Amino acid sequence: MDAQTIDVGDGVIRLGQLLKLSGLAESGAHARALLADGEVTVNGEPEQRRGRQLVAGDQVVVSLPGGEERLRVG
Image 1 (cartoon, rainbow, N blue to C red):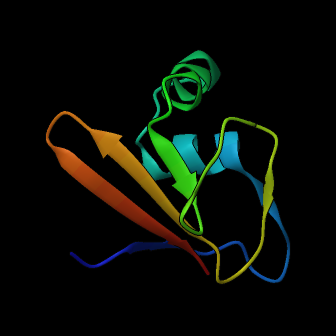
Image 2 (tube, one colour; image 1 turned 60 degrees about the vertical axis):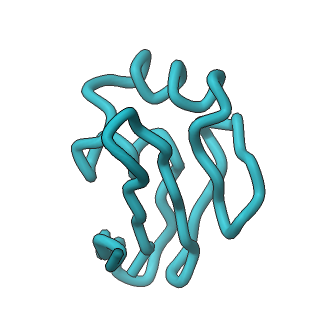
Image 3 (cartoon, rainbow, N blue to C red; image 1 turned 180 degrees about the vertical axis):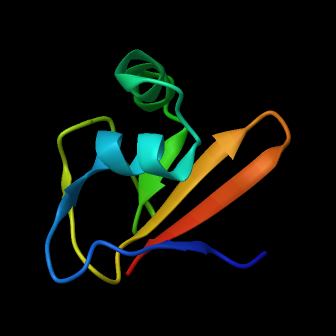
């Protein structure tokens, strides 16, 4: 499955913001719940910090009931 690329220019984005921007989380509370449930990995490692800073090239995978969604920071 191809990853959805989220362009952040040459800056950084926090993981919670990325989840909301991509549409995988409806709100900050929803993003927090996904992270607390262990549904999110960053670059292959489990992540629970909503404030984790991501940069271009980082890969995020979110496990959802319908399957995995993959994001790439661009």
